[in-house]
Amino acid sequence: DLHGKHQLGAATDVVVAGCSAGGIHVFSHTDYLAGRMPSQARVVGFADSGFYLDKEMFTPLKDVIITRQQGASTLSPTCRAANPEREWVCLVAGASAKFVETPIFAWQSRYDMDQRGCEMTAECAKSTQCVEDYAGNMSAQVHAYLEARPKSGVFLDSCSRHCDGGVDTLPVSDDGALNMLQAFKEWYQGGRRIFEQQRGYPCPDCCAPMIGV
Image (cartoon, rainbow, N blue to C red; front, side):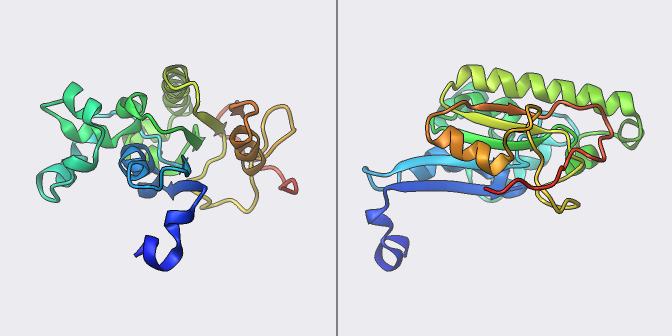
């Protein structure tokens, strides 16, 4: 029991964080969790590698959470109301992030390795142009989300990564000033909220040496 054993009831700052499937659920469940946190706590989300797009080869696979796991009640009511025939779309940030009330900071690769496998055909994943087209679509949807939710933030990088898999260092923003941990800190403290590393694919040097936090 988080309240009884770990003093959650006394918390002042709560960051709901996750990577991959965990990042997906930061977008889909942080509002639900925020409603169960102590009233004095500031609650935000941190989603790593969780901004998937609404693709026919991916989104319908999420229906198991609705049809078999009875998970609809934990999703955004406004998203469900907007998608009554496909509530599972509320588990895909590209379609559902605009409904999330809780501020979220997303750390997302434009060339995410998992998304290249599950949201692209094998032929597309081998095509530089196709991967860059997907990245452009993702960037546009992330910026649309940020426009709809002005308290949220993002570090959008160009590493070939999923979570921290395949990289030993953190990417740095194009201005060379901040890595994603420093960017999250600046956002959390009320500074700027959009940090980007916009490079072509592939970009073997995009995960530059880590800057001290």
